[in-house]
Image 1: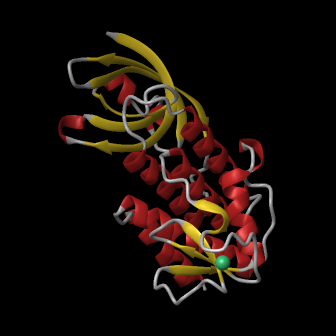
Image 2 (image 1 turned 135 degrees about the vertical axis):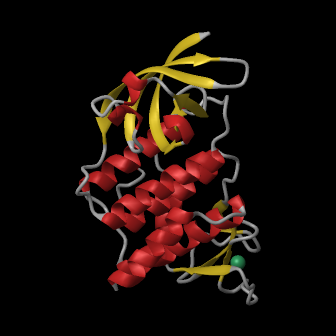
Length: 250
Ligand SMILES: [Zn+2]
């Protein structure tokens, strides 16, 4: 059966005999893995449509358990070849997260919009890289069934305090009066807590529209990353690479 789809190319890898394995986040079918073998399709002039971080229209044959790309056209490339290397590393990490979290065969409109918005803002450089990365992480976690409880202290119901703690394993908050030195707690200033709540509760168009001090952003980022790694129970090469780059740049 042949069908048309569109989506963001998350990864592309050349296998033997010049066959390309392309991983795509589609609107309606989640993440699908397709083969491209047609010489015409893999020619230099056409292959941009199958390159990572490109939004493309695809014509696909679906066999019993494989997808084969029959034709592809590029709609939008998010990054120039000269893009900042740290920005590209985060963009790849967002794609890697989708590959491992979004299953095949589910409607993935929300995840695709989130990824496209995040890549757009990263490519324009209008918000700090850590802000885009952390909002994406929390939002993707909430779409995939891991919405944390961030409304109030889960012991006494306090809405805010100078310092609240996010417990990574439970995905809940406790205030400083109810805190008993739990090992997986991430301290959050008022600004960091506000950023965390905004990332999860704001309407989709406004998720990146907030400002936070450098310290609050660092706490929010620590919370988002640790929560994501705990829930996905794995490491990500692109994230390790980004962290090396950030350490090197300091
Ligand atoms: Zn409390």
